[in-house]
Length: 289
Ligand SMILES: O=C(CO)COP(=O)(O)O
Image (tube, rainbow, N blue to C red; front, top):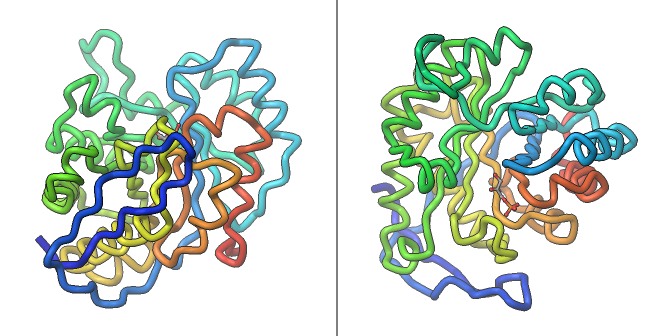
């Protein structure tokens, strides 16, 4: 494990929020590290939501919204709607992402979509290691890391997700869990220039219990220092570490102010065009031309 620091866990935003229990560790404060110099990054993970009609409406809403050119915005529809979204979403504002891909190339893998196929079809990004795939589909750290390396080799950019459960946070194993998830990636990934790390605490996903800006900042700084110690400043200078978990149009600005938050991965609020566009505009001075 890396440096030691204390965790502040009070102050969740939702009235029906269940705040993760307070805990302290004997961690030392982290060295100050610089936040990423790359563009602010906002991803919309539509998950397994939508219909032909609702996707059409969402695409229209997104196209009518104004997004700063200094923010990189990526939308991740379910596979079945990618073609429609590719045809109709404004490419000047939005890029496309898949939500998953297979661990290797084309072959006898019924029901899967390969990174090579995504690249061939013109999809530049893929989300890998989302906690829903880890918990519901049994994807291990090693699987996620191998998928990431394969997708990068196939030419995709990867939004690689990490994050702890509430039990792990409360029992004090959060940093070990994050270390394990990150180390697996460090072991497999050779070129980090097309990797975005999404810190998504599982207890904040779809719960309305957003991490406080301080909670998110603390983990982002930890992850950045982890990468700095393993990969060097050359990588962390441009590595985006984005936050996901109950981000919405009301809480995004406050989170975006934190030094080490380089963007967001948005679930529920990405299904409403106006909310997602507001989140894309939360970068403030972090939006780089
Ligand atoms: O899982 C998420 C994005 O990948 C976050 O989902 P919510 O924004 O709905 O909490």
